[in-house]
Image 1: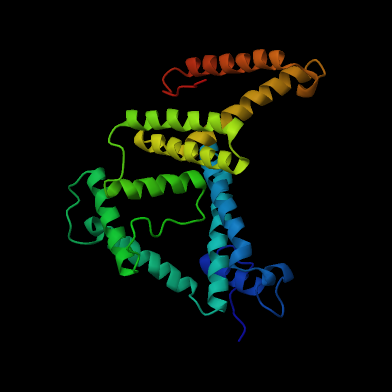
Image 2: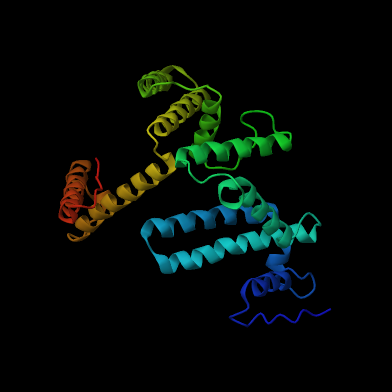
Length: 285
């Protein structure tokens, strides 16, 4: 039976998007590329789109964010179309499941629990509900359910939070700092006496404990590293621009000269931050 949804109707809403995906995936009349896709081939695009949403938010570009949210929504539609074709689930069942979950996890909004509690208590209650959900799914281990596909720093943070909830944690941040010193020393020694595989292991240990320090300081390590990446990009672009004025490129310069330009970029950023005054942002070295 022919579906009467008009894919050209700009007011078609969600039914229009679902119909577009259905037609793209139609084995007889659809797009050859779309027909060939699977959960596995689409998953990298899903991750990429999520990061592009975060990037638009970080840049404060609302027009771009609108488009990126649409791209991310398309990923959900894509996966649900594949799932429906295989008989696993449908778009309706997916939306029903997340709606049920949100209602169940917010009894202080949709149930009879009091809203008169702190954000910290609500977070604890949320985690307790999630733990009961994992138990119902036979996920009994403390670390069960922490997705393998998460970015490594984010997964490290989640693993550490889970372990901390059952008491496996350093009580003081100074102990974490001591561990960082220890791991850094082991990595320095590894450079001369250990195999490359052992050096990789020591580097992993150091990064893991760095994530632990971020958790103790209530810092999102992914966000902190993204900010550091952005800062490095800004300052290196300053170097390239300054050199370009004299018709040169970084490879035609010296490290000392580039270091001086780097310091100029730092000073320019700090001056700009000072002019903003009340922004409260601190540009570090």
